Image 1 (cartoon, helix red, strand yellow):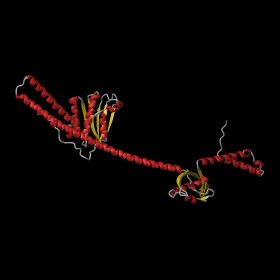
Image 2 (image 1 turned 90 degrees about the vertical axis):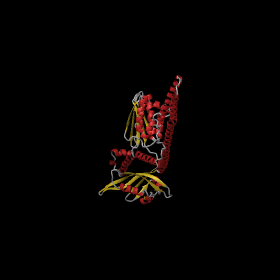
Image 3 (image 1 turned 90 degrees about the horizontal axis):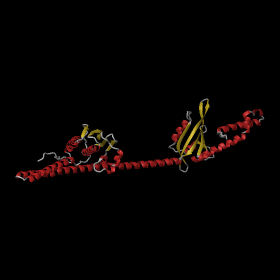
Length: 444
């Protein structure tokens, strides 16, 4: 079945005009004018009129469904014509023409300058004669409505140039849309304010956590120093005195062979206790760390790992790598020590690298090895099982101090941990002791 194409409005108008020409020819007895296509047009006159009526009904239905109003303005007479919908929108009388000044009075004063400028441009010939604008309308009862209008200027050619004949356009009430936009804008502003407040609160709490973490680290370090001092000043001295008295006892007179053996064993055990106390005191609070800084302490740690555990540690440090913050050397030293023990235990390699440097006001510390590595997903599975100063405990402590820990590893390609942390000097004193704990003094 052949599809019937609906004629356009202009085509129907042209057909109607052709049919009217035929009627005029018949009325003036000019039968010979009825030839060719005009004879066919006469036979289809009724059909053309019906199609024209139907097209006009469709146009009106479309306008009513979309609540679109039509308008036109004639610059020479300054008359404004509007459809019923347009007049309702402006609160004007639909049965009479309006002077443009009457329509102008209904436009919001704040929008008039923009509309005036747009109207002046519309009266000038241009490549794009179409315009569109949103504006507010003031009703006689005080209500305010929003409207959007789109129009086009028609020009005619004259000896003096192009002259604007008429401006035609369509207008649509967008009050509901504007109200929805205003409510959405208000909602966004409220949401932004709440997000800003929540962000400020989160930042405040984060600073509080950082301060708490510093205080906890300070407290822990003070306690380490206290215990180290007890080990040195009390326990080691008591053990040294006990060993001295044992020597005095053995030198007082001859002892039987069993007594000499017991005295020798007792002396060896006292020496072991003194050495363990000295070592524990040093591990709790290394004097080098307190008095010479982080880099010197890491250098001592590298030597200690080589002597006690056979692990080769290569240290690379920039000249200004020592932290300014009094608490960071202790936190970073213990983190590196734990990472080196992890490397020795799990990497399958006897070599590790330490690099210390700066990036602006941040310290960068990296511990790496070329061992067998590990699957990161397995590390995540072990997170909740990890206790003490393990890898994830290091990560949490660094984060509490405002830093971050990056773990780069995979099976078969080594293990690299990078710590990036701000080097900030707290406003309050840390309270850490500067009194030396001489754990390496000669035995009495």
